[in-house]
Image 1 (cartoon, rainbow, N blue to C red):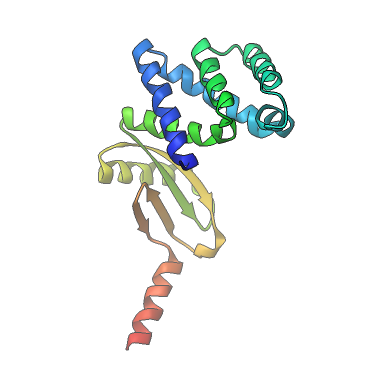
Image 2 (cartoon, helix red, strand yellow):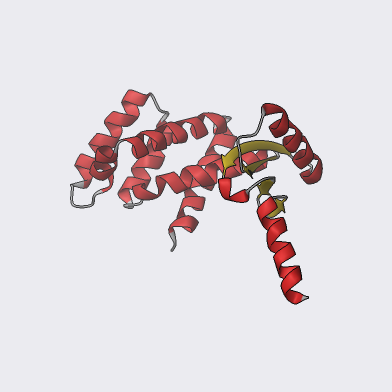
Length: 180
């Protein structure tokens, strides 16, 4: 089974438990906090996920981290299960899927807006409003800068790509001229 399928299953299970007990947002925050620690502390990630270390030792290490972070018993159970199945290395993917599921639940889409130069707050707000009108969903905008665009913007919301960059316009003109 691929890691993405497994990560999605763990994320769905955690969200189901969170919806039942009303703590789905808390579990998302705990997952985010744990994954941030996981990514910023490679020594911990190695010690907790390396099958060469005894499973009991890895459980103690994870248990101490979870306790010091003040995480819920449900989240600790998720980590124990993943550790037991040697699947702790996919925890970043679990976070990603969990966030997508939370966004779906709240009718939120995430957009990536790429521009040649940094955008002003007004420009981002205008793009956000246009995307919300187009998709009918609330939009959370993340911005990126790519000087190769030359000018304009490229907005991505899920599978929807709106390319208003000068680079794509020049490419279209080039293709038109080549076709004659």
